Image (cartoon, rainbow, N blue to C red; front, side, top):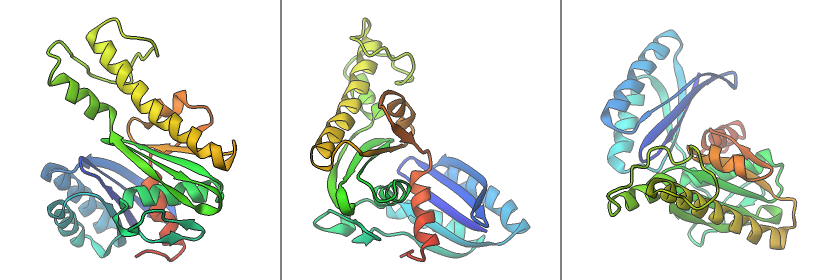
Length: 252
């Protein structure tokens, strides 16, 4: 069995594959309690069938990385933390210092590039932060954008707007000006996120043509994929990137 892990700043997603088929998956918080939940599951799974390899994408701090590695080492024979590289097949990292690109963004790009058969594509991860990466012709990464996610934008306004009681930001969106403080915040945050994605798409299409794939992941990605034509939503794009590297024998 193979364990694939996407460790973010607030959530840790994981799945177990056997013969390249996902047989179990889940998500926990990135805190100590969440790691205890993951350990309980791994104990049960590992006692049934040994976990040969754990492949990890992590953007968490060193303490959280060490905690995760400590938990996994009890039940996994080998642990590998994936790192960002200069290229994957024809996909070329566009950063001046390639290693400084977040590994989660790199893996999402790999998965999208592979799913799109190497065609130009826009890759969006709408989580705690919203990241957008642009891949042009011949796999040339044009760079990207990083902005606050919907919840982060909302919470920053809630600290200065006492009457705001925003709960779910993606429920009951109307695409029109809000007639309450709560609705005004929700509509504004969603329009700002949508505007970033659409402007990025316009920029990419300007020099790659109209045939651009749009791949979206992350907790708020469902909302974006509903309102952007021809977008493909994948809740596990980062984990799919791990699978692509592993299947190609390119894990580093």
